[in-house]
Length: 169
Image (cartoon, rainbow, N blue to C red):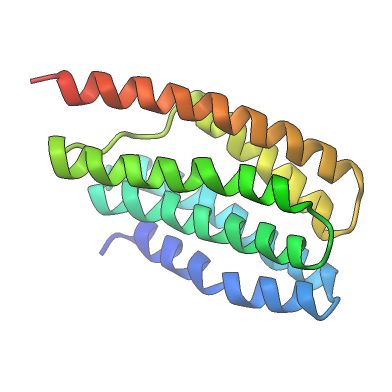
C-alpha cells in the first residue's frame, strides 16, 4: 500500500474524534483535528502524484474519506441545530449521487474519473465553511450554502465527464 493511501486511512481515523469533540463542545480540538485531516488530504494527493503512486484505490479511497468526513460533520452540525434539515439533505444528495455514479462508472466501464476543477472548488468552499462552523462562525453557514450550490454544478460537470469516459473505447 502506498504512503499516500496510508495517509488517507490515517485521515479516516480522525473522523470519529472530530465528531466527538464537536459534540462535547471542544470545538477548538475538533477544528485542530479537522485541519490536520484536511492537510493530510492535500499531502496524500501531492505525495501520490510526486511519487507516481496514483492508484485506482487512491482515486476511490480519498474521495470516500472526504465524503464520510464532511457528511459526518454536516449531520453532527444538523443535530446541534446549526444546519437546517433541508440543507443537510441538499448536501447529502449530490454526495450520494456522485458516489453511486463513480461505482457504476467503475463497474460498467472499468474506469475511475479523477478530480475535476469544479469538484475541487466545491471542496475548498466546503472546507472553509466547515472550518468556520466548527468555531461557531455564522458566516460559515452562508458559505456552506454557496458550497452546496457549487457542488451541484460540479455534479453536472462530473456527469458530463463520466459520460465522455464511458463512451471512449
